[in-house]
Length: 317
Image 1 (cartoon, rainbow, N blue to C red):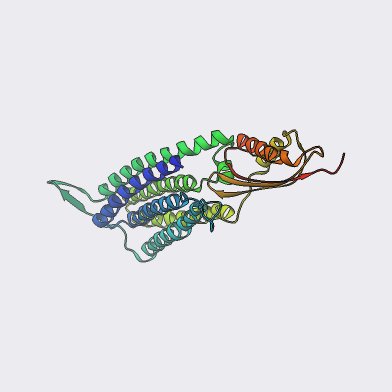
Image 2 (tube, rainbow, N blue to C red):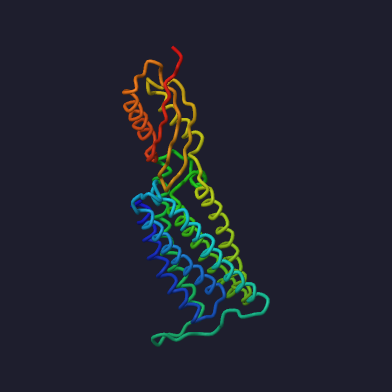
């Protein structure tokens, strides 16, 4: 949890600063791609606020109404980030870019004078975008470090497998967002430079449209990833197999009748099972057997937090 919060705070600082710089650049130059990037960074800043609310809410103690805690709050708020913020920012960016392509409204040309120095106005956007790339690179470095830590810890093959299996949606969302932010800043920079190199301002507007489409595409992908956890996804089959093996190592267990797992929060798993124990087992031994199974499961995977075991004594002699 501490790692996820650090990732979000780093992104919040970076995106807040970037949003102010990009909006200033748009006001000075009227660049369509800078306005798209302003929407993008405002969206990203709002994302971090939602994610922090999700982290704070998920830390609440379990209650009668929520006996397994509030961990799924992070799934919900990450889903909101995808649908409300990425989606809305993407739509507004794409719409503005399309209108600039079809009806004009490209960046203003001319010069600016600051502190007695005169220079082309589009220099402002280049400086702002280079600064944004620097800030976003820092935020992505933090997110990637946490991603790699979890990839190494759980033995995943890489980022693609992490996206399929990761339950820490806060880190997943921050990593996705920071990657998109770098791509968006790069697109805006390319659009502005192409416009100035060719004298055709439509490239700036095309960049704005592409940024919006990219945001909407990633919004759908992120929402899809969150859906699997909101609906109650189980651990991967290979991990469940390892947990079953851990249970079978208990000398009293002769058969696993049912075995189910489900995420009840980031890095928090509920395991339920029915097991058959040997016919020589006394009623007084059952508590010890259950405790042994719980210890073996938690030793096999640190995400196992809640364990419910229903033992049945075999009638076979």
